[in-house]
Image (cartoon, rainbow, N blue to C red):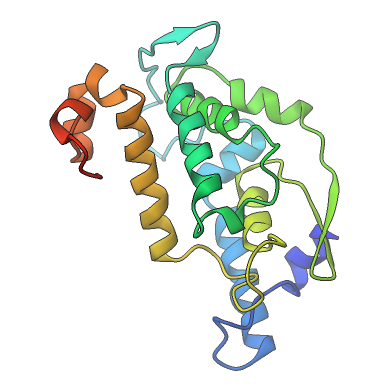
Length: 210
């Protein structure tokens, strides 16, 4: 079960281990614990918004909202489609049938102060078991479990199974983020955001990848 894997680290990959399987177990367990103790992820799990000691409460951010859907829906849908087609990212994604784009849009909407649409959706999300390389897992129900399931996707190469995200994975992920935002008009509609992100709008970029 996922709970036992979380405590024992049995699902770790040997690729990152320096001293065999025991060391790889320690690395996987430590990585999961860091995620689960992250203040932001803990706040999401508890349905609260973390405020640093002495800090100001989060402010609501004006959003372009239609029927409780953030404008980012088009971009996150495009991002999901590109990730499915990318040979580096797709092995992390066990099931293309999950509403990855909509869930990501809901998370962005909530993080920017639009309301708890992602938290409310998580409360109704079915959690089902799935098997991967002889271990049993549960389908994701929050960010830490989603990352853990991605590390142990049955589509990953055996030599990398259990490894958490590496710098090259993150770089491709962010490049696809910017590409999707540009292609769906986010940067044209919000040039200040494009400038802050250090990328160019579609009209300025031509065929150049960001």
